[in-house]
Length: 233
Image (tube, rainbow, N blue to C red; front, side, top):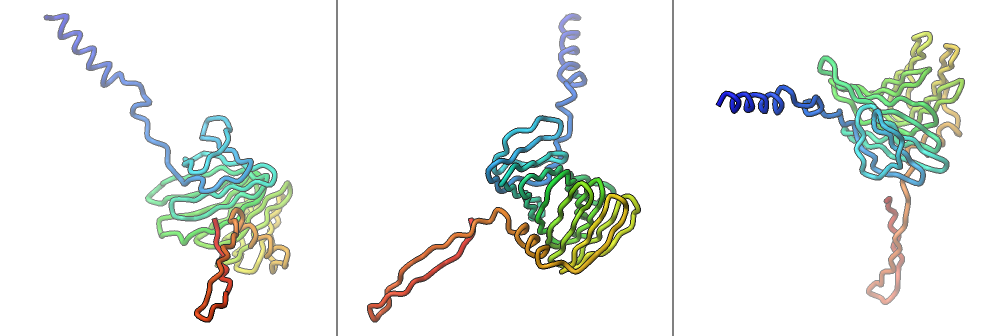
């Protein structure tokens, strides 16, 4: 009988107090998902290796997404914010909660993105970061691109606070303007050129395939009329 109770005690210990740590590990914070994958797109789960991305894959905090030549990936966040990675771009997405504030951040490692950030609630923040800059977004659209020497932020709607990390100097970049942040600490703003506006608008639509549906309708008089409907996939 003594051995029986000892065995029961050990079983309870192994099944409870001695359970493997991963049974009690918290689930990774889900930030969003890959809503569209076009051509060469890779996804890396936090702490794992890069693998071919699939449409519909969820993105946890710390996950990376990378696009190849002539490729596009669209990331949809839980608040319906859309992020469009242009070709040869690489980002890491994070979501953290602290003091009741949920902060979503996209760390740009290379390339360019088009963004449509939904209006953030009082307890939410959305940021784009790079080795050079931080862009704090409350709800706006535009394009953010980085290179070896500068970061470029073009705003199409509303206002984005743009800060240079080296000097901590920041500027508010409004609709129709472009901010440039340099590795040497300089930061400035200017009215967006036609080329910058066009690049921003294209980045915000990247991955949307415009198609047309043509139908021929016959009227009461026996004649015909073409009806053309434009739609996106």
